[in-house]
Length: 475
Image (cartoon, rainbow, N blue to C red; front, side, top):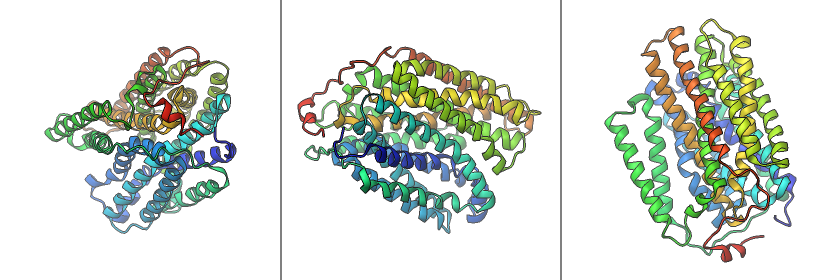
């Protein structure tokens, strides 16, 4: 723990920053029709307002996490927030499609520095049960940011104009930056290590191409030559990355970290849970708008119970994890999430909010909340402070890749079921099938959680071939 830090300030700054990062994953979705009309987007290009953020965010997360360890967490935190804020301003002032897409790419780049830096700051500032509580608050805010993004996007697009879905970030970023001088520690920087440039290039290009190939499947399909070539190239680059990391002195991701059942298990769980959660968010939103014919603002308001359930689940998870272990919350949480998604899969064309959305929203959200907080604890259990950014970047990358790949795959499943028909009955059938698959993903997450150790007490640090040098970087 940092002696000169103010834990409350660190937690507030990290939560505010993570909130705005999560908010921007969803805030533009409901505003897309207004953006298309205002800037003259071609239909085929409009999806890139969403995809380019996921592309740069997911592609640079591993690099951002390791940069936190090498150059200091506060430095990356401030830099990422500054980039994110400036690009939000640029997006709000955009006059042409390319300007907005470039701004969204910059936001993703800033977020890739902010997210692992925020989590690494919490990891190195808090210990024991205080860390579990901090992760619980951080996870609840992170989840609420995604849920409230739909609400904020709908309300802003309908009543203030689409530009405010970008400009609303500015006061939030300013609030986080204002807290930095008040108590956020600079963090230890292992600047004497030579950065793993080759690993950074291979990881960023490999993950970036993977996300790029997946997000284009909505227009090209999974079996098109372009998609197959892109995914094959990504696989080759990632294989080269793994080979490189086993042979460099200061790797971007130390492969020994993945030998920990906690770290490996947590990344599998968050990948599966994110794939199910992101997809459910997307399809339930479409169900309300395209089948139930709810307006943008009304759809956003309908997600408020989901946000409340996430917070309740996160609070409960914090107490369970503090008293027992992450596994004690992860297993029932994933099972509850699967039950809620299975309930969602019973949607009908003649349904309504009270009969088809409210009940499963509460069950699914509480279950998701029970997963999000302890999975963060599990992913950092036994990790040395000098590798906190590395573990944080890895976890965030798994979450982003899970959400991106899961959504793209299930969108294909839904499209195949509808057969191109746009009737309410056909759309409902496609969405229901995808929600069923989302429930299955949560069941797999529950199985992965059941394989975790039962207790975290006296868990030794993960062996590192750089242990002595890392000791010198701890504060």
